[in-house]
Length: 182
Image (cartoon, rainbow, N blue to C red):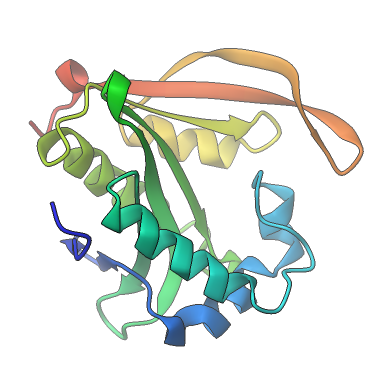
């Protein structure tokens, strides 16, 4: 696999973000509501962080340890969010992570992208398992994972300390043998 992977769905093009996307990423990810429901997105989102993030994405794809895609609407090429897989090659599994800009919540973009990235993980990367997690207080993310075919494995109680409070994490997964697109 090369690092220039491009995926498509009915409404989205998933591809490597470019430096020109840094401002858009900072604007979308900089919304406090995104930080509240994600583990690793800070608020405020610092200047220069999007450029560093894009560089890390490029390195991860080049080294085939991480496949992260910007989600662009096909209709207008607008970046609406990010999705990716962090690979654990030795175990033939990957962790799915994503975020969608607030103005695009509830439109099915995360589910549509997750289904395609899961297909890519099993078909192109030959993974056996893809897993994800979400904050228990964010059931919308759980619905994305469920609609993408993932099944709940369990909850880790007070597993994360974020913004001074302990948060329960729900873990889901899908196995290659369970994926209906194969």
